[in-house]
Length: 174
Image (cartoon, rainbow, N blue to C red; front, top):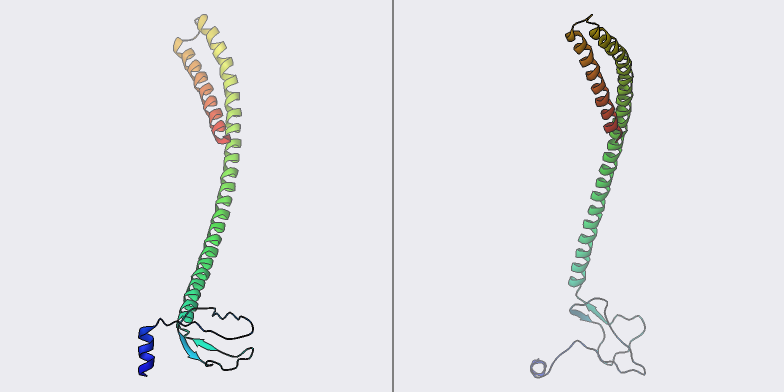
């Protein structure tokens, strides 16, 4: 007892083990920790596979627990990412369907505007003839200036409506 305590106080102590052998053998543990059990003493014979020492498993268990927590966190992260991917995919599919529906609606609107333009061009053609005829009648003093101006204004309004509808089609095609 006393000799051991005074030896430890006077000398540096390490957990290094020295073995006398015909060849050099390196001993190491896969994990660090405090040695809790020494199964062999100095000069005891050692065979291959013999347990020489045990290390306190607290550090190993702590490292294992931390690794398990990290693994669980990553698994939860994977679940969350899969759920997010599913939601994004559903959202994109929905947006794609909405876009297709909007494109179809725009095509139908363009077709409707084209029919309106055709109808207005027919009306404009008639109003141009009426404008020429009313201008002749105005020169011959067969109608009042007001009647000619009414036809002429209607013709100009119709021409502007056709331009407006054409621009709407251009905007829908863009």
